[in-house]
Image 1 (tube, rainbow, N blue to C red):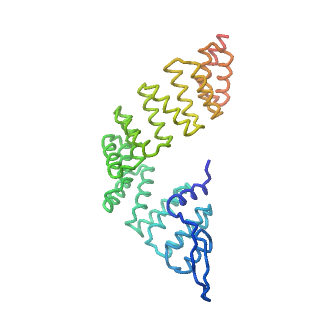
Image 2 (cartoon, one colour; image 1 turned 60 degrees about the horizontal axis):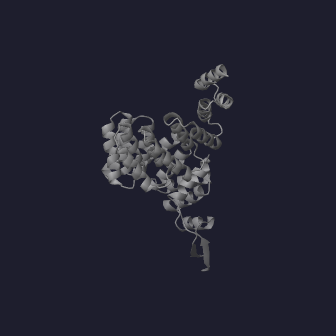
Image 3 (cartoon, rainbow, N blue to C red; image 1 turned 180 degrees about the horizontal axis):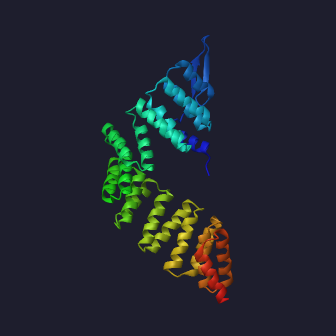
Length: 340
């Protein structure tokens, strides 16, 4: 599992604070030229020396610290950026994102509330605060912030997407679909919007779900999430060969994906009664995830169906060792013991 510091570093490396390894040339007090590598302590400190009241200088140094896993130093610099200019929205939202990724949700909420007081038109703070309102199921407050954000910028696909989440939570699926649709119309490259449209339409039994999943895949060809959703759609609609093909694609992208192997086995077991192929896939799932007790149980069913009672008993025992309250495995074990 990725550490908190790694998450923070990844976030800032990917978005706000990327920089090159070029050199900056400055003159010292004696008129001598000094060269600084732009990804260095000296470079960022020189920026602050040049303009100690510039909030962006502290913001950039914060990003450099966070990008290199120095969380405390990065958060301190974000505070200094805010002290330099209490209305400087990017520092407020950057700290909110850092606190959010650190799972410090209460400090994040408090910070966002202060952000909205000092920089009331800063959209990222509005969106992050609305997101937290949604998590807390405080939907009216979330709606108010999202509508405020849309008054500032009517093309905020994230705001429409969040409104879709709220409508979905409230059981208004038609309005939720409309909101998700608006999100992708505003931003045709909005991957998460297509995923939500696929999930929502699949739940309603609308065949257009397939096309939304395919649109998501076209945006991110190596996305396991999009392909997995499409495979599950095929599986639930009894298009088993299509589902198996997608699961194989997933395993080419992510060779350790135990769920794709398990689902392949499940199709062979439950729908095709091809117990040998099912056994092979469940074995592969177990190799990828040794504590996958459901895979042991299902492989036991395959072996029992092929009259390999000893193998089935071993699998049921292992499933129960990993999950002692697994009732289906206990019943299956009793059945095999009676048969032997």
